[in-house]
Image (cartoon, rainbow, N blue to C red):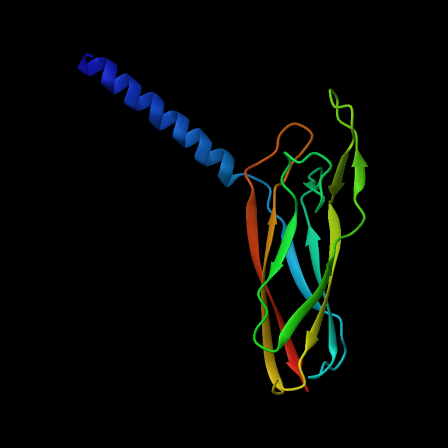
Length: 161
């Protein structure tokens, strides 16, 4: 291989990686907002929490249980502190999305939806600020393309009385 060929291949590789990085930098991102729905939460009780999700216009994500197993599900994972148990995570009912060249519709969420969470707090948990971290994992898609899967870190801050 000549020095000119090596330079040409190096230039092509740089251009291709630059385009890939640019596409990932421009991928649609979800805005997530953790919400504490329980008024005056206390130890020994059940907490009602929610994650409000907003996607850019004309963008959707797959449901938590997509019909096609090759598609990436939308998943919320919580890491509760000691004394807190996650009882349930409830995803909204998906919408049906028909796509050209697909026999079966897709089960999708978006552009805005809310995930509901129920958590039990042990009676032994001390009053004060309680943090419940979570990760929202999703793959944003539009009518033409699905972008690389990504995640948004979030955290609920609960003031126990």
